[in-house]
Length: 395
Ligand code: CTP
Image (cartoon, rainbow, N blue to C red):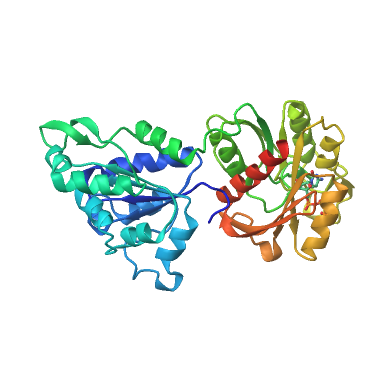
């Protein structure tokens, strides 16, 4: 099972309300859920796989004989923390009630042991039919959470019970099941992202390959869990996240200033930025001519983390990142000690791996020597994992 506790399988049945689940998926992502969509084959008549893949950013399968080597029906069933089936047609409810496994979704439902919420949507007559009533009662008696469909206008001109509920109502009910409320409400998280650039002349700089994706993923995850988020972003080609106070900077010195100004209010400081260790000693106001471009004299940049930790107030949690290409664990252990960090995420960046990618792998090290291995996962999932750990340390 995923350690982030936010992995959800969104099952989509073959009803016209399938199109409304596109919005549901978006809202779930904004709430910090990591969603894999599993449509039934008939639902593809309403919304195609390409739409779900584009919206979820994940591969979409409908049958067990797709992606066979990965045994998707077992892997997804084990990986998910919750199932949300919306919309569920009368037929899908019937198939689940009798334990059929004739597509990927019903296979997953049989294979999983996690909580399942079902949101029915169908014509009133079908909802009231004794067969459906009995099937729903069976599912409820087995612990499935079956939401009451809304009353109102149906697909045709008539109205009654059976309408797909509003997205907010579905999410509210889903949250009461997942109990993943806003666990960072009242906390301020200060995050650095991206890579600093140290100017040589008006045209050139010393930079690095950091994209800022990890820092932005952390900001989005913290925001979705109710935190106040301040993001100091160095040279990231990523748009501001509404609700996150973003300060754009260029060099290590600018980053340090922005972090220092905001340090006092922070409960957690996460330094995911790649800070240049040195900068040109002299900045040339004019572009340096090729003939004069021999060597650049460098001077050390301040260590931002060490500077900030020197001013830490009691209870503040510091999370560092380590990008290593050799002797990873030894260097990481030394870094956590030297910088007096609470947590450190170590990633192996040999050959430029991880920079610019949406996924990551490595290890989370804690001050007490605990090591949590991080197998290949999205930067979103890692963000929640790190926030879980930081929250644990905050107490
Ligand atoms: N860091 C920092 N200031 C610097 C350099 C790094 O605050 N001048 C922070 C990074 O944001 C990261 C952590 O320190 O959270 C470790 O960064 P890394 O580059 O791996 O380590 P360095 O301290 O630079 O050590 P070295 O390059 O010798 O491995």
